[in-house]
Length: 260
Ligand code: DGL
Image 1: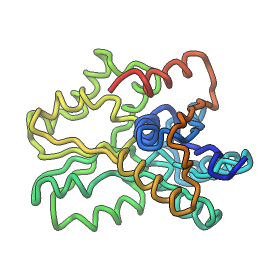
Image 2: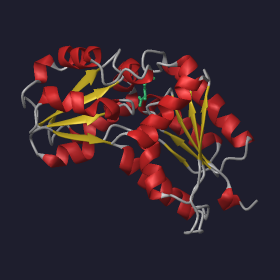
Image 3: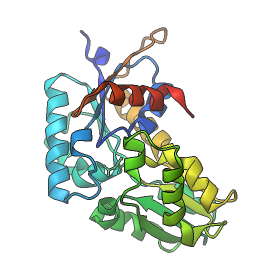
């Protein structure tokens, strides 16, 4: 097997990273992907940095042992905990992470108000603080930790009344166009994007980092000479999970192929 024929491993604490995977599949249809969700250990966002770093490194070692050619950490929380360490450990491997898409949100309206939804860990960590510093003069960025939100997606109950009520309570102070833009800084949140839009108001522009991350992955794979050149080919996606079940696989397929 040629190196460019090997798989790309995409990883998240659970099913949220599928919001990033779907952009990758669209952008690189010839590639084979393995998607690993660590649902057994989810949520990551309420764990310590050390716990998340250890889990992430161990998953990446497993992907590399299986011969995967590139790694996408489709989880903002795991990225902030481990991407730097991983790049130092495996400098020859294309590794991408994801971070809250503050840049386009701030550019959307200079001097405006930008709400950034993410996990408690993402918001607490150094990486996010550095990101905030870059944009603090251009907009008012309001970080909002959202413990409990990812669980609605993880359990498949993301389009229920309970999820809607939860989102309403969470965003109550920012309802009815009180902010100019919102950033979905956790890869689970695009699956409750409509609920978020309903509460924030229809004038609020919502951003996430999925497409940007997919583009960056493609760029890195290309630079490394690992992009599959066969433009006739349709690649495949394999789902793996640390708490495997038929329901989980069905949910993954629904999230990837079933809805916008
Ligand atoms: N999907 C993850 C992220 O992007 C986090 C969800 C969690 O495990 O708390 O941050």
